[in-house]
Length: 636
Image (tube, rainbow, N blue to C red; front, side):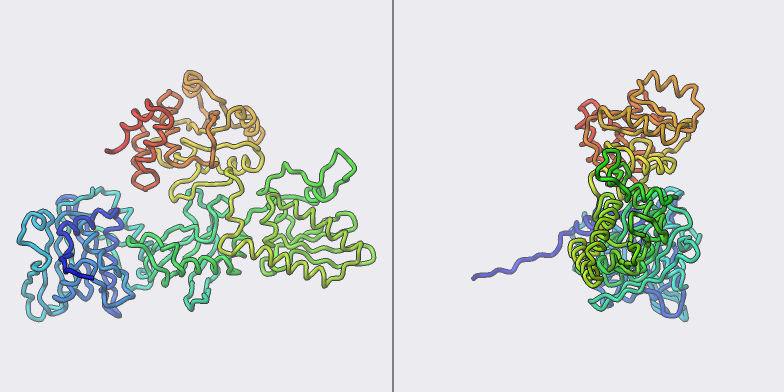
């Protein structure tokens, strides 16, 4: 085989292209803070200052770390130069260049070690690309003499000719987010971070006393998961619950639903864990979910007794009495008036009924059935003990077999029948224990720990939209849960029902929209009124009727049901669809929020909850006319 050597020096536009990799302003500045933290001196609290200069239109990030010498500055300016230390926050050799190029077209690095000259490196995008004489091989680094005896040290990065916008609210947002992102360093006194001279504070989640549990999970690979979990004093409707997951003291994912499902029933679960060994993506905004380290961490976190126990303790209970359960267990198979199970009871409520009976005994025929929640005895579904007059049955409703049934009460009914047969046939206890062991093995084999059935969504109506900052309006949460349990058809909360928190102005009456399948709207209306009679619910109102009602309305809010023939895949509309549905209501005069449409869309775009392309695609499916009008709101 013949070969030929070729020049594969990167194109000069590489630095510019690195800046187009999708950094948000906060993420780009975080890359520079990462480098500052890597340069901290042992035994000293490092000061990192972020300055957003609104007057001169520039961003400055400075620190009093160890600074860089000539070789280190050369390496810092070299694309993808791997750092010598592998435990650094800046580990890819790309962060500083790509972050600075993302923020602005010109950046200057001034750095000095204690007692040494100040080194200066400047990158100017326009000059770099225009001048043929400027190449990778002859990049210039200058220096300034330092006064004799000076102990100044550290690094200062100044970014000019900005590509991003600066606005005052960023200061508040950055202080809060940097405080959370670098919480362990701030808490331990290793680093102090300020934004425009105001300190970033780390505040731990406010959990209820007595619910906090330490997490120390030793993994087969030899790595560990450490941290703590607990229950918030008040559940978060906005989705601000879950886990803050750190890697080497730096926040990677906030309010992650790692190991739990996104649902109002889990909205008090909170914790902080460390996954120092799991690889992260280039932007350090998430873990590599396909890596062996991540898969292992998910599996063993889900198996941990503390995690499972806390999730069980959090599950809401219903006030119930013996009659509620006996109604299920006591039936006459020869009577047409009774059935083994009242299937009108939804899965969520039936589970709450079971949990509400924790520690109590119910009588069913010749059986005394004790219902317990025993997270520490997961291997046993039920135990029996026979006496001359009765059989005592102890049922563990925390067993995962209950998760395999759409209605857990159905399994309770089967256990009642089975234990009656076993008692009549004098089946020995050893056989019953062996049967429990085999059931447990079957469930464990088909329901792996990393995917507990509590997360599995049965049917499209059970699916929710797992997005931060995006949630159903707090005043509608209980109604949403009630409809999930009682309403047999598909429905969807959309429009202002999910975009309520994004409105910039207030109106005396809020119009919330619920979408129903064609032909089911009246049944939905009657169901809501039965749930709470004071709700004002209008079914498919015309624009004139709705306008007339709003003109004289004094209600706090109004529910509008719209019947549509489209298939509803979620009980909450995705943010793109919710905004289009809100736009449609405004366009046809059915909602007084025309002034807010642009503000709502801007917020959704800023938080990354929607994409312009997806909104255009959805609008086009509605009609070309709607797409044309929606397009006016979208950025080019």
